[in-house]
Picture (cartoon, rainbow, N blue to C red):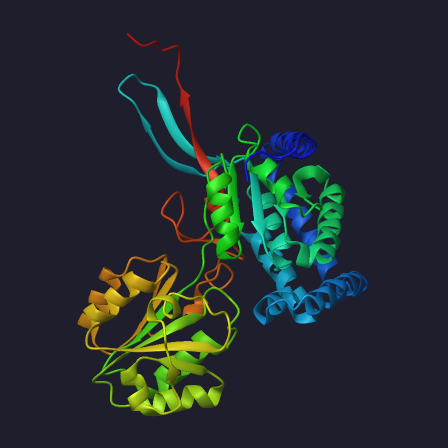
Length: 425
């Protein structure tokens, strides 16, 4: 796709200018005012009447999703209930309670000239986020941006359009009640991808793009954006069971990492088991009983008859299933596990279950991913679980953030130089 229509270009520019104006107000607003908006939002999300309205809109999206045969993993991400609404409200409250990152002095010193120099955090600017299916992202990203003094333009997928509009309306109401611009958080209601292209070309008005969704969405964003992109890429996560790992721990952690919520990016897709592990058959049997659909290489199939055949290893080990399918591979060492991860992983989350400190150290030092988990589930790779309240996305790139993107990652820095009339000689 080359160029967007003039109508869409004009619409993107209008939204960008409104966001830019709101950003100027937000960046100079008090922490108390921004926190007040978030607390109003959290209270609204817990209101019975608000929840009933959101659920009614969510049902429209769910009905359309089922009519259009949307993947089960996407339907799961789309659905809202009382528990998820309360989780959203709790995350917003947690974000409000964080120390304000804006104005934090990172370092300072007096230069040879006598000029005093400090480097401090300032808001990043206008963030354009593209996401699919998850309506909670509307609240999560909006809350993180308001907390850090940034404006946001949110473009959700058509599958969640009614729910996103309902949540955005609640958010805007909270902003206005707190005395902040309604345009601080905007939502794009036109789902035509051509309008998305127009936004990706607004490099004079938008400072950062964060795509969250499938591989096609990520690729489209990266290929067409004139604005820096922080990728929330696919999660081909891997877990390695070492030869001396405790069986009870292994079964509990692997089952959680795969089956607790299979449709999310931090659920594992590949299970690597050391050939010398004595409980492989019992582990695979236990996982099948828990609901896992096992696929594997010849060695794992010889070990347990419940393992189905992987017919195309290069494709299937690199696939993000987002369901109960779990690919199994037998390996002979930490090094072989690491080689497998480099070949098939996406740099999202890797885990090792082991009692051997040396093996753990080799694994942690060797894998190159956004997060590494030792004797615990990859499901902890989440902004809320890691004490950030929520996340804008989980970055699998290297600049400017890696892993969950929280409030401090929505800031950049500025230098303030203070003197008494010094001039450069």
